[in-house]
Length: 242
Length: 102
Image 1 (spheres, helix red, strand yellow):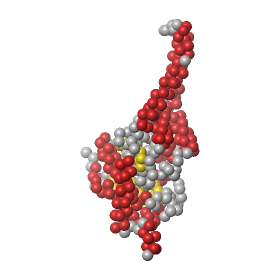
Image 2 (cartoon, helix red, strand yellow):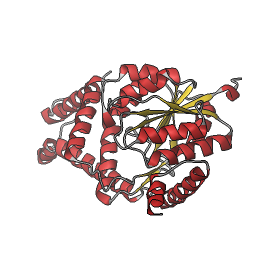
Image 3 (cartoon, one colour):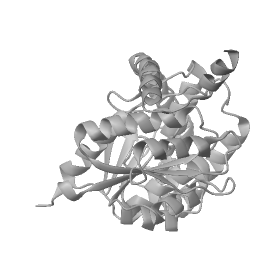
Image 4 (spheres, chains in turn brown, blue):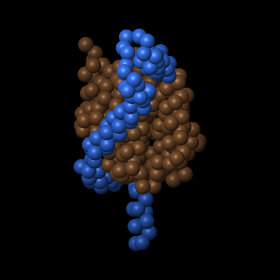
């Protein structure tokens, strides 16, 4: 039987202007992981944030220690895919968790992801806003309609076997993540979709855990025409090539 | 098989079945009065499909969980986290601003 005591979880936090949220999310991750006795590290990949996020990260490194907080900053915004590659290359864990650093994803779900993974030795565990107790806070009717509409379209066209394809709160086995990032070429939302579609192509197993998504920035960053066009073209690309 | 190809295959099968019904040559001979409906089969199919999708979307939007409790919990934990971090020596920006007033 697998010795789960030797599992280590590397949590990747790509950050850009998260000076306010970073201390809280690190505090929450540490709280829940320590409570459950899991071995972990947090890899902070700051892309040259002008608001001083890196200094905040350095304070956290002093408080929590260099083995728990690993700083691997970059000079400028280089995109999520390369941030994951950068993070994986410095990860000492055998599992990698990716999540947003803006508190829309709550670290309390990480132990649930871990338990789910252990159930059937899943290659990937994905958080879903659309099943069971999953949901969203802070969206108006229009946003919900767009979200459900886009999700239905994706289900019909791609039949991915996963309820939430654009979610970015996931746990991966490290070598699985590495293989998938290497085979994906899209950006943004579509990147997260492509990861799951490629995972299915490779025959990886995917478990799901309902999560709550607390959107505190929806008021500031509306879902614009640009993003919808990007999503639609990405969907068509995946439809026509996978 | 690529999804696009699957759909094209499905579309091809649908068109073939429709053509057979229209020609009235194989299997079933449909009476003249009903032929209009046969011509409209694609319209009926798309219409039913469209209605089904709308119903599904409406149902799912209606049942979309609102996570009020999660938002409340987060608010409280942000406060709690700030207090605890201050105790451990973390300096938030507001602290330096307040000190400047003294």
